[in-house]
Length: 383
Image (cartoon, rainbow, N blue to C red; front, side, top):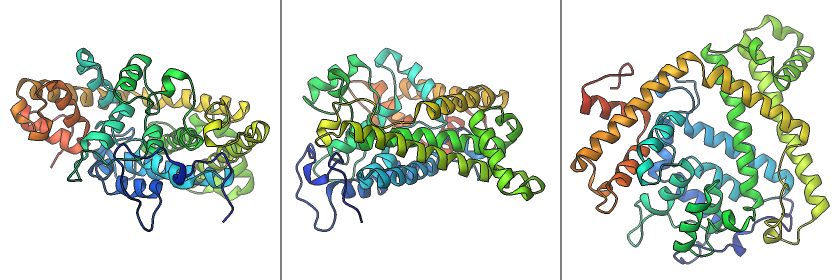
């Protein structure tokens, strides 16, 4: 195994946990964080949380859990080539969606509107809230007590006013970089890019499998067309096979091309700057990323998916129903906080307790609760 680069994060040099703990005998702190995340309740619930398609719409579509695993796989592959810390990348990848609501972005948008009078809702902040407070597995503290570097990677974005509030609560903490303009660890930056690569690829895959878009439509995107043509040229028989084989080969080639591009572009930037260590790398922008050409191609794919898939009439219909479920659940629980489990009855800000409870729901549990409370069945069977 090759040695890590000097600018890689090292668990032995971690800024540590908010509550000091003795080291584990067989694992470093980043590995220990990963294991805590995998054993958390929030991680298990990701299996029934939506990416694009509502959970009942098919067994082959991605969920938040399978997406997180794909991000971890891509992230580790890139980290290994760049000699960064694979364990930290995997840990952040597995935790990055823990705060996502049921019903994907539809649920997040609805909950954000409901919470507008109390500061809104944002899933990155909620993921941090999950690992810092909402998981209840230890006798001496709430949350998972994760390392600074893991928590920092989870908090992908944060508005300046909120960052300033968080900085007062935790001076020099995970929100500080949004105030002073520094970067997160290289591993956090890499995981963020692996997230983008993964969801563009699997949303294309799920979109074509669903029948809402076709591979022919997707070939309007240069990145897709280029790799589809390469696949057909290398395997002429693909044209006579079921379309899913051509789709799979096209996406496989797209993923490889994007991964190799990130590795080449990032290594070039790192070799030019050569940061002294992991903390010096935080002072530099643009060390992890696509080449300019691949950035352009990736953006074009994202625009296509937004217009053709995320705004497809069938998806819009599901989105409207999902938003209604979240909104009506919020109203029902806010009107009757006693209906919440005891740990979510916040005396100071009752709405935040309602938000925490709904955000933790799976798609099917949210549908079941909505049917129980309202007598309405907006999505097929919920049993």
